[in-house]
Length: 316
Length: 243
Image (cartoon, rainbow over all chains, first blue to last red):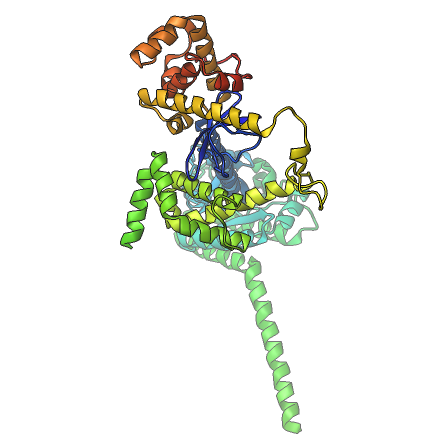
C-alpha cells in the first residue's frame, strides 16, 4: 500500500492511501507530496459494539441463570427422607433447608392421613406437627402411644441434625404425651423384610372404625387373633416372626392391656391404671433409656477403676 | 492542582480540534522529549529521530483518547508514549534483517545502494515530481478551504468500515457518470445530496454522515488533480452501502 502525504503537522501527517482513505499518521519528518510505503497510523478508539454489548450481557445473564438454577437445585433437591410411623406410615422427603418437598403415604392409613395436607413451603417441623395433630384427630394416635421415626440420608450431619430437631419438635408439640422413638434405617428395613409390626398403636386402629364402645364385647380369649387379622395392614405385621421376641412380647402385652381396657371400659379408674401400665411398658422398651443406663454403668465402672488406682497410689 | 485542571480543559478542547492538539504537542515538547530520552537512553534530536516523531504522535493520540477517569493526563500520556515506542521498536526489529537502500555497499565507497540503483528516476526528476505534487496538494487544500474544510477534518470524517467506504465510492462513480453533480458542487460549494441519493439509490444517512469526505473525493475528480487521481488507482466501486 502506498500513501501520499497530504498535510504535515508537528505531531501528525494526513496521508491518502490508494483506496481513497484520508488517514492520520505519525509524522516521521515527512513532507507534503511524498509517497510512502509504510506509515504509523492513528489507533482508533475501541468502542464496544452494540452487538458485543448485547452478547456480553446475555452471557452474563445466562451464567447467572445457570448459577441460580444450580443453587436452586442444590437447595430444593431432597437430601433425606423422614419416615413417620404411627400406624399410618408416612414418608416425608426433605430438602437441605428442612423444607418438605414430597409427602407419601406408605400404607392405606398413611395415604388417608396425608390427604389434604399442604406441605408446600412448609418446614418438616410444621408438617410433622400437622400430621401428628391429624393422627390425634382421626384416632390413630392417643395419649401414651408412640411415634416411630426413621431418618434416611446420605448426609450424616444432616441426618443427625434432622433426627434431633424432629424428635424435640414432636415431643414439645405433643407435650410429651406420646413417646417418640427413633429407629435406624437398617432396623426398619430388617423389620420390613420380616413383616414385623413396627407400631405399638395397633389397638388404636381397631378402635378407629368403632369409636363408640361396642355393645357386644367379645370374650378375651377370642380378641387377640381377631385384632391381628382384622387390622390387615402390612406395617402391623399380621404374621409376627418368632425371632423378634421383644416385639411379640410387646404386642402381646399391649393386646392384653387393651383387652382389659375393653372389659373394664365402664370403670374409669381401672382404665387409668391400665394407661399407666402402658406407659411403664413403653418406658421399659425405650432403647435410649437402656443406653443411658449402660452409660451410667460404664461411668460407674470407670469410677471404680479410678478408685482402684487411687488405692494403688495410696499403697505406693 | 490548578495547572492540572487547566491542562485537562486544554485537552478537552483539543479533542475535536487537530490544530489545538498540535499546539498542545508543541507546548509539551520538552516533556515528550524527556519521555523519549527515557526510552532511547539519549536525548532525541528533532527532525532526525523517528522515535521523537512517534512520541509526538503518541501524545497527540493521547489527547484524542483521554478521558478524566483514566487518571492524570500527563501520566496517561507518558504511558501511551511508552507503549507506542515499544510497538514501534518491535516493528522495526521485524524488519531489521533487510538491507537498507541508503546503506553503502562498501565501507570505502561513500555512495549508497540507492544512488547506484538505476530506476530511471534521478534526483532532479524526483524533486520535480515532489514539487508538482506539493503544488497540486496545496491547490487541493486551498479549494477545500473554500468549502470550509481542512484535510484534518476529512481524515476525521473518513469512513472506517469497508462497506461505508464502498458506498462512498459508488456515490463517486455515480457523480462521474453525471458530471452535472460535480458542476453543481463547484458552483454552490455544497454537496447535491438529494440528487445524489436519487441517482445512486444509496442510503441518505450514510452519505450525509460522510459529507466532508465525499466533498474531498468529488473535488479530486473535478478539477483535474492528476497526481491525486493517479494515486487513487485502486479506488473502484464495490458492492455495499445500501442500508
